Structures are given as structure tokens and as C-alpha cells.
Image (tube, rainbow, N blue to C red):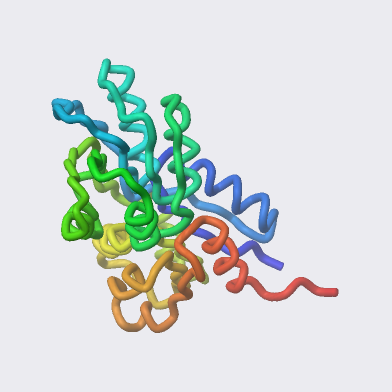
Length: 240
């Protein structure tokens, strides 16, 4: 049985980890081609004054930015409220207490509203799918936003372009609406009808053109294991 091509578009360090997860899950049934669509660039903003009770972190990149701020002398709040387990795991390296919403932005808002902290420092990138601060302010939370990184768009690699141009079936995992937009921009002029998108959310699916959106599989939850489970549905059943 020929290997199924999977295009890994995640940025580093997630890309390397995702390739390892795909290999562990599918072995030689999968041929993974890595072509990150984004490259993180960490900024050096002026750390704001304030008696913050907690960080709010919505991404692994935000957690890595927190580590950089701390290394530069910033006094971080004593705890971080994180969107998911991986973000919390990275934030723990700053030596602060972490709590994970284990889901998406909606889960994170609900977790914050269930807690007592009301003076929050929200570290995020230039491009945001939603304004978390605006969602919290009506509930009495004082949210200071700080842009700490940007994700620079990257072109598709030559092997990725060749795989798409070949017309062979190809699984396309997309982990955010922005990833979907960047892929469409990077793949302009290439045939796309043979692709099988696997998307992390309905918002990401809606970015795709109708023909691809209709084919897309949406992960049950917005996390890595659910994306792997959705990708598994693209493979034929193992014999026996």
C-alpha cells in the first residue's frame, strides 16, 4: 500500500513535534512533508507597570515569549491561566503556577470567569482570531494586552509544492484560520481539488473555498490528539 502524503504546515517547534506524532501514529503508512507556513518572531516590548495577578496565555508562542520576558528581567505574575495543556507545560518553565483550560478560547474565558483574578496581563501575537480582552472586560476583568510575537508568513517549500502539483491525494492539516488563509495564498496557482483538509475548528473550515470546505474534516476538539484522530479517518482500515 503506498504511503499517504501528509503536509505538515505547523510552525516550529510544533512542526517537529507534530511530525513525530504522525510517525508514531501511522508509521510507514504516512509520508510527512514539513512546510511551516509561519515563522515566529519574538518582540521586545516594554513591560507594562501594574500589579497583575495572572498571565493569560493563548498559545505556546505566547508562553515562550513569557520565558523571554522573564529572562530579560520582567517580573511575571505568580500564575498563568493557559488555553491548553501544552501552553501550560511551557509556561511552567518560568517557575510560575499554571492552570489549563484544556480547550479553546471559549473554554479559556469560562475558566477565567470562574476564578478570582481580575487584574490580568494578556500576552499574544499580532494576529489574533479573537480579542480575548474585549470578551472579559464586560465581566469586570481588567485586562492589559501586550503584543509579544508575530508570525511571519512563509512560502511553501519546493517538496511541498511538488507534492501538491503532482495531483496525488494529500492530507492537509490546518491548525488555525490564519493557517488556512496562508496556505491558500502560498498555494495560489496550484491544483487543490485532490487535497483532503483536516481542520481544527469550524472557523478554520470556513476560510477554505467551498469545494475544499465541503470535504474538510473538523476535529472533535481543538487540540492535537483530536487532529490526529481526524487524520486517522483519512486512512483506509488496516486489513485483518
